[in-house]
Amino acid sequence: MSAIVIGAGQAGLSVSHELEALGVDHVVLERAKPGQAWRDRWDSFTLVTPNWTLALPGSLYSGSDPEGHVPRDVIVGYLEDYARSVRSPIVEGVEVTRLSLNGSSLLAETNDGELAADAVVVCTGSFARQHRPSVLGAVPDPLILSSSEYRNPDQIPAGEVVIVGSGQTGCQIAEELIRSGRDVVLACGRAPWAPRRLDGTDIITWLDRTTFFDTTVASLPSPAARFLANPQLTGAGGGHDLGFRTLQALGVRLAGHVAGCDGTRIMFVDDVADSVAFADEWWADMRAIMRAQLPAQGFGIPDMPVPLPSDSNRWTR
View 1 (tube, rainbow, N blue to C red):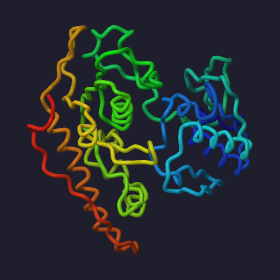
View 2 (cartoon, rainbow, N blue to C red):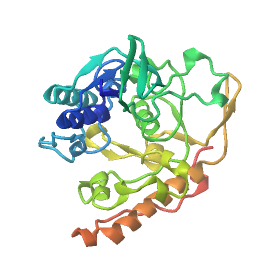
View 3 (cartoon, rainbow, N blue to C red):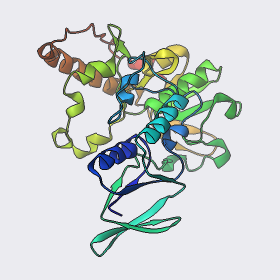
View 4 (cartoon, rainbow, N blue to C red):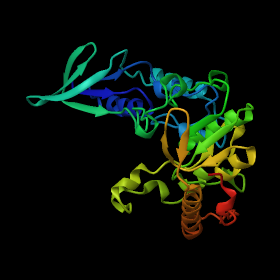
């Protein structure tokens, strides 16, 4: 075997397409089914980026709503159709547990035996392993869910709900739960914020017109900056603004980082205002990038809202 591709998500399928075009003999090993990471999202999950970003090598987006946001099952269906159209050699139900050198070859150890290849391309995505902060260690298992286990509000027992983490997933689940009538507390961290649309065009489309997506790791202020959360956005309901201010207006109570818990109570750090300021500073940086670069690309500068200064007294502790 010339090459092994691990994972049949959009990255693995794209690599398979390119290897096939080059005539490279390969196999795609998938632990479950193509697009499994998307299948594992909650029931109402919707693509956060606009539909045109669904495009993969040899398959440009051809739908009627490039600036819209399709639901989870449409994303999965698109990847399944793409896999069939490019005749990707996928083997389902095979999980790679270890990679090692075997002379001049690489050896993939799987739940179905070993497989040697000249090259291996790992396309398992980022943050595939759920992380439970140690400060939540005292919370009993029946009362704590990872985001990959969440499906819908009916799954959550009665009572107050604390969501730890204010990235895209945390904000989207918080909005769904508060709209379902639940009492929600969001433990906030450092996550960027941006409006969903500017002058009717998606913010991702605007940023794609700049050099934002060409940023290299070497140009970041520190290597750790590559782990910055994605901006607080949602595609639910056609796509709309979602962030600290919109969640608070819906009734979500904002708290700071989790400081600890004793099994019955969760304690928070008093730093919500810092998280809000961080989000606002990132959006200020994006406004500066667009003002500096859009005219040179032949685009006008859209109307870009500036959030009101943060008042620490407004934020729940």
